[in-house]
Image 1 (cartoon, rainbow, N blue to C red):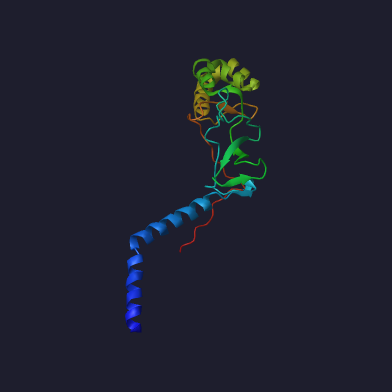
Image 2 (cartoon, one colour; image 1 turned 90 degrees about the horizontal axis):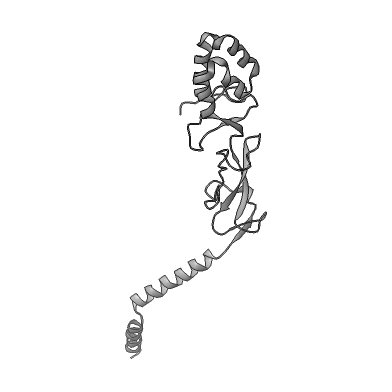
Length: 200
């Protein structure tokens, strides 16, 4: 008799348990838990964020100066502070929102145009106009008095300026389009050396 009652109870339980309904409730609870977890924000020092935890510069921030074609506020130390955007859910302690300022590399310019310098070197280089323009008056006077070292100095300066080896005398960089043909010269000194590669 008791086995019969247990059997009827199990049949009723099977009748009330619907696997599809259970899976819908399970997925709904996971969705609610996930949406609650996404609402959490963390307040941190944004200067210590790693790559991938922020976008720099901010996508909505116009950071290029139209006059110099470099990031706005570029200093003689070749650094500029730009606005950056932290990842979702991160709040910066400095600003109390998800933006912060970070230094990025730039090329400090002081008004010397690359195109103007190259054209002066090609057409008036025998008179030293390119060297006068860049701030080298002694070399300009020497080229003027020797007709550009009999055109050999002019030819050498065209190559040196085109390859951006010779720049302005004040140590600044040429003004050229931001995505233009800028060259980064790699040098080796006591602080840069080749790391030995060991066989593994």
